[in-house]
Image (cartoon, rainbow, N blue to C red):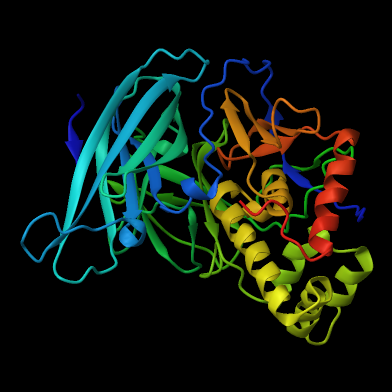
Length: 426
């Protein structure tokens, strides 16, 4: 046991990144996981995880769990309420071999008084993670509620330059579980395995377009890996300090030849939520006709324009509120689940998730994911296949295998929204 601690066709262009390439090998068809991590039941906990490599054989799995969705009980005659959880992990080789490389678990309690106050519960476990890449399957059990929430992480430990070799904290000392931060934040980076005295900071400003529809053949448009500017920061004692730029993102590297490093993204404080009517309009493009979209974009009052769009679809104010609430909730969920070097709602998986909802079944395997809508044994079931893309900015980048076959399913889902219904409200 490890040591533990606390009917619309639109033409859009998708930008990509130089050196974003598919894995050369065909993914093994031995699935590593069938946990449907995109269903609501696996999102309600809102737990966050990160991995930090301490040395060549030990890594730290850190977790941050908001207590708002935990069940508190009074187990005895005292007035105190308790939450009780177990965090369990299993490490597997990434090559599809299901031989367990390491496993461990931690049980923790949160004691409160007669009233339960909102807080985040943080802790960590030490894992025996040797050189190479691994898959980490995580389960969080609410022992009072008797529920299980599943997560999956990729462990990158091929070299000392990758993002998991850096622990990022805010200036107040709190560990950063998301690389999307506010402009102007001061961050402190620590790295025990990477002994470099300098970090090169490449700064990018990019406006990424929406993905193509799933039935539209097209290639990712490439832009050269050339930062808009760059500078160097030096280690102060054991840490690096940097200030987040006003927009865009920065890529920090210690080995320029490989471009392997860690990326920090400047985002609006409301992210993963939607900040204004202009962004609402852009997110709704997936179910809008071209003219509808242009009318909303060019409207003098964008808020009124997007509200009128939803009222037209819903047929009434009340129905419109229900539709837009669920649609934009999916946008927020997509941002939480699929954000990479661009916001999650602009990704292939985000597009499918927003329009179709969470898949009925999801298979995660070495090199990709398969989403299934409908009964798998039936001929009408729709399967979307996503290939993992290797890029220097994110480990969460997947691209869909597009096919003319998806046209009917896509139009059916879009039409369902346009008729005033929520497509697969799961």
